[in-house]
Length: 588
Image (cartoon, rainbow, N blue to C red; front, side, top):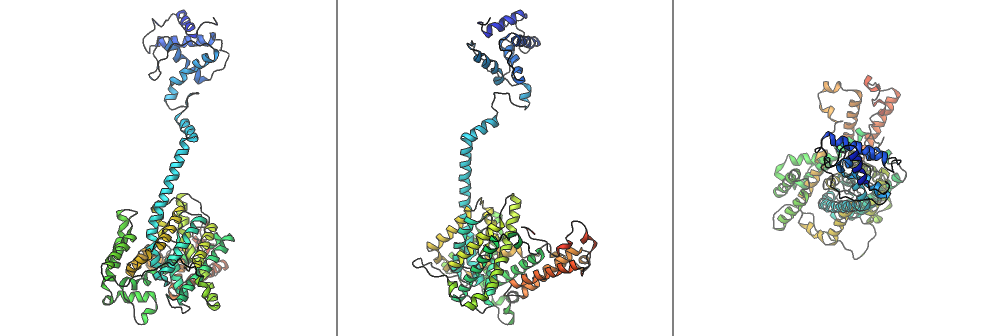
């Protein structure tokens, strides 16, 4: 009857089938399951809603409800329901769908698709994520990223401050010049840059090239003209990178021959370490061997009687702490600890040799950039060295940045980075600084300390500015130069080893003769660039130019057929036509 309740209908059908709830078989018996199936079939035939097509998964749950009503066993996870009479077809339909929600079929238990009408855990998480959970998790992630960047920026500033002092000592410009460059360059690079790895500041290669270019013109290190010349070099470096960046030639700049570039970097690193030997030992070379960094370092190492005991002791302790600090913890502040301990020792009266000297920043008046005081002849003479510094010092940091980006699956724009560093160099020139570029050691420390975005670069720059404004420069009067020299030496120590391209020449002659043409060619090009660079001191940028010219000459000779190549050179996939032009990361 239409007015009969569904429960009464089910009881009547079960009585007609010969099974009643009172005499139902035991829990889980075949009789109960078969009776439930017959009842469900009867319901589907007799129900006034049988014409409605029901999904298979919903029908599959009907016997479970019918068997429960008939007294048969129900799944353990099916909750008991109170007897209720539906008063409308919509309530009957809703009641028919209830078994799907409370009982899971075998397919559902085995990991199949969840029944219709049942929200899965992923759906709950997804819907909650869109409504509120995702917003909360996004806010927490943003807060954690900002916190990580602030901590990484402060930690990197603790490394950048003593490093800037050391590079100022290397460039001969004075500590104030390097500090102004570091403070003025960090903020523009953080805003305009494209890579979270590239920390911009003073680097050893740019400092050494600056010293060489200015000394080659007869300027006295530390003089006003010397500082003005450093500012002019920073200006030309910035203009060069802006022109290359806006011309979209970033990939072309990073396409110098790899053999020549690696030979130049290794030779420059040797010169950097050699130039810090007098500061680490507290003595100077005298005689004809003092004309070159390498020969002066060799003379000092062979004459320990002229060493200053306190200076050598502090340098040795700095090396020990710097080389073993990361074994304690990856973020162990080795450089900061060395500066604080040595400064405290000097403050208490220990003789550690010469110190850096206090500096002060006068914000009471604005002065014109020192580079404007140079004569026209001096400014014209610095154009070529400035262009060379602008291109050469960018390549090393770009190669390392590109390698880290590939490892982490990130994308960075070389042209955008050139523009950012160009603006940073112009800012450095405006405040009386020196050329700046990507600092590999500082970038590695920032990456290790958990920097997530370029906000860490801005925090580093803000900390350096705060150090200068708050009068922290007075503390530099107690900082020994031996510690700064050791810090610079430790920074370039990993780069002093010959690269894989250069190692074949160190093998026996017979083994070297059996190598392929390409390996021998690249090896000889790298070592030739090393010789060009070492003999070009103090104008070391000429070493790279000569190495690139030699690589181009070899390439043209190969194209003309003047050089005999091995059969392996013409094999598919070989680099026969590259002419020593295996490119650094970043493009051909």
